[in-house]
Image (cartoon, rainbow, N blue to C red; front, side, top):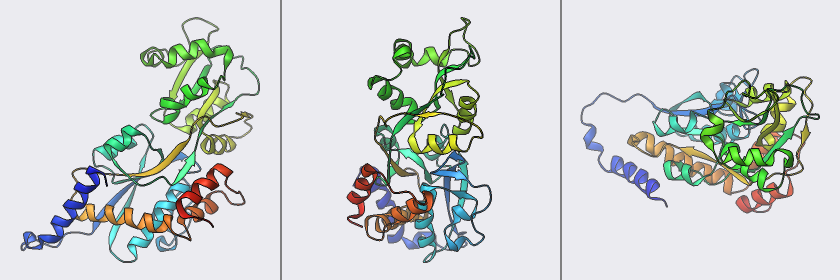
Length: 325
């Protein structure tokens, strides 16, 4: 057990051992869990075009609020089970890739239900579940080189592992040989590409090397408008977001270049005892629902990718968590 998790558990035990401290205070209002969700990270966390169903008890409070996706379904399965035995409110809060971990660090959200890759820095700052999905960085390319002289070579969503690790992994695999030298230079010089003009390079006819976008929807639109040659991101997200763009043609890469394990991240510091107890219960319920059969992971996969079978790598990942089907 990590030091942060031990401290969280200790705060819960202290609250249970000292009930007299509440004195004659007025009854507290129902506890509240603020859950961060994304609108742009299809098929893992996105806003559906219409509410999935009207009854929150039917499948969880996040889907009842109009959100859907693999990570949302996992969180909803846990939250729905918890609410059968105790009363608390679930408040969905829309976040984006750039703000999500800052909001978690500041205590403005309690749980993050989006495709968040496990990294050392994130584990140092926050509580996290065990891995619940395995993805990988890939890229899509336009079928022909655009004529737009102001195009960007590589686009990705800011504050994601596509920026931090994906670009380097693709370059190490020998992709993009025509642009390799310039991309390696800019990939290793963060300030250089960030300070470049976002619209058009200074020298006419030369493509801007890199560009960070706020959302996948914004990146997909620019890519399909021939403003970006290569779209780097998690393979399921790239495929789903581009598939939703009308009349957009692209080529898939031949492989994935990283192994990205997703986890559910939770607030881990300055947590009130009542909320800390709910967060511990969330982690415990998540373990029971995912590590034993029937597993919530299989249920979430079937609901998110109807008619598809997981790849061999993903099947082995699921097997390692919940055993043989």
